[in-house]
Every structure is written in C-alpha cells, then in structure tokens.
Length: 314
Ligand code: 3HC
Image (tube, rainbow, N blue to C red; front, side):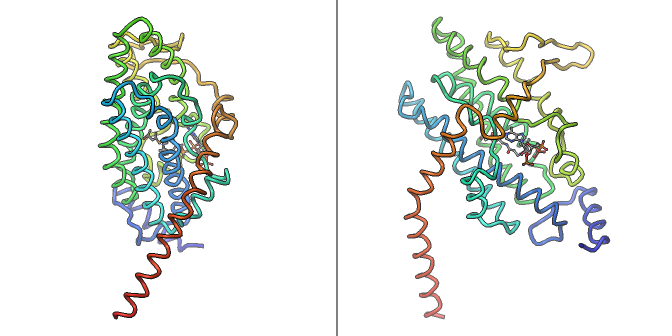
C-alpha cells in the first residue's frame, strides 16, 4: 500500500493545480487511469484514420484529396504522440497495441460507423473533430504534463480539421438539391453517434468522479456534451441544416439547447464490439499490424547494430 501521506501530498498538488510529471510520485490508480484513457485515446486516433481514409482515392477534387490526405496523416501523428505519452507512464507500446488488436482495449465508438458518401467526410470533420476539440481543449489542462502538452499540439491541428469539414458542409448545404440531400442525410446519420463520443451520463460514468478529483478531466461527460450541442446546433442552423432530434428546443432560461435522450442500448452495443463496422475496423488494424512486422523488425535490428557500434566506440 502506498504511504498515505504521499497520497495526501499528491492530492494537495492536484488541488493547487500543479502539473504531475512522469518521475513524480503518483498513486498507482492515477497511473492506471491515465494508461487506460490515454492508450484508448491513441487507439481512437489510429482507428479514426480508417473511415475517412476510405474516401482518399475518391475525393471530388485534387484540393479535397490533398486536404483529406493531410488530415488523415495528422490523425496518425496524434496517435503516435499519445502512444509516446502513454509510454511515459511505464506502459509498453507493444502491450497497449496488443490490447487493441486482441479486442481488450476500447476506442471511440464513433469510428464504428460506415462512411457512405463524400458528405460523411465533411460531417466527420465538422461534428466528430468538433466534438474532439471540445473534449481535448479541456484535456489540454489535464494534471498529467505529457497528456496536457500532447493536447496543445493536437488541438491546433483539430481546429484545421473542423474548419475544412465545416467549409465542405456549408458548400454542400448551399449546393444542388442532390448535395443538400446528401449533407442532410450525413448529419442525420452522424449526429447521435457523435453525442455518444462524450461517454455515458455522469451518473453512469464509473471513471469520471475519480478523473475529476485528480484533475485529469475538469468537466463531466454531460457538461462537455452540452457545450457540443450548444455550439453545433447554431452552426447547423447557420447553413440551413436540421438536427435530427424532435426534442431539440432552446431553453431561454438556461441559455442552452435541451435535447433528446441518447439510445444507450445502441451505445453499449457499439462499445461492446457489435456496431456496424467494429469487425472491419479491428481486422483492418490487425492486417496493417501484420504487414508492418518487417518494418518493426528492421527498426529493431538497426537499433541493435547501432547500440553495438556505440559500445565498440566507447
Ligand atoms: N466509445 C468507446 N468507449 C467509451 C465511450 C465511447 N464513446 N465513452 C465511454 N466509453 C467507455 C470508457 O472507456 C469506459 O470503459 P473502460 O473503463 O473500460 O475504459 C466506459 O465506457 C465508461 O465510461 P466513463 O465515462 O466512465 O469513462 P471516461 O470517464 O474515461 O470517459 C471518454 C470516456 C469521454 C472517452 C474519456 O475517456 C475521454 O475523454 N478520453 C480521451 C478523449 C478520447 O479518447 N476521445 C476519443 C475520440 S478521439 C478523436 O475524436 C480523434 C479526432 O481526431 C477525430
């Protein structure tokens, strides 16, 4: 058992808003919570490349292809930052990736839905990256230094992701009747799964209270979800799009948008691996991992030989 005085001193540091660094004392539970959250965040970034990657070869123009290529590459970089940040907690990259490939680890449910048209690429940029920005700007103030710093860089790139998505949404929303129909259909299909990105209601969230006590999160799942709805309903109405929620209503008293109930059966079905695309996403990751074996072997052999050379010289 850790020394209780150390735990009390740790909590005092958190309460004073201090940043915890890798070499500092931290309760085992704090470490485990961060490894869970950060590795799953990294998995989400890497799996998140697949839905949009599906449209790179079918982008409607060279400009759109270049932008989408750049965005998907950014997501790969976000995954690598986060895997590296997770390693500062003593978690091995191989172990966390094995957890993903063996189905033991989670990644964001949102990436288990199919991208049926180019309009989905626009809406993912606008809504999914918009949701990520709301969550990640909060995490940029996380108590764990490497996570907070990774978020600062990632948020800068996410704002480009959202802007390029919203630009496409606006263009299609004022385009031909077919384009207007496509973009509204994509909003209808992605709105509710995006609300699910923020996790279960606060009362049903086993991790939130502890994460807030330790300053990893500073807002609850429901608070973040409400911020997302308030911002994106306005943005949808600005370009003449409808939100697929009959219970959506502006509350003059609170200044927030009231919205309907999420289908939590669908949420847990997808989280537990039975969503529309879960099997395809994991199979694609397993195939990429197998095909990348030779690269890992070559890198390890190079590192081994370089170490031998350095030892000879010293
Ligand atoms: N998808 C999959 N699993 C989810 C989930 C979702 N949308 N929401 C919650 N869960 C899981 C949690 O992981 C937890 O399971 P676990 O204990 O086995 O890990 C369980 O459901 C209960 O949820 P809690 O609310 O108790 O868990 P958290 O407090 O950790 O909240 C979270 C869940 C909001 C995802 C939080 O972990 C978080 O903010 N993570 C960091 C951000 C992140 O991972 N974002 C994913 C999207 S990345 C992205 O959008 C990339 C962008 O570039 C497009």
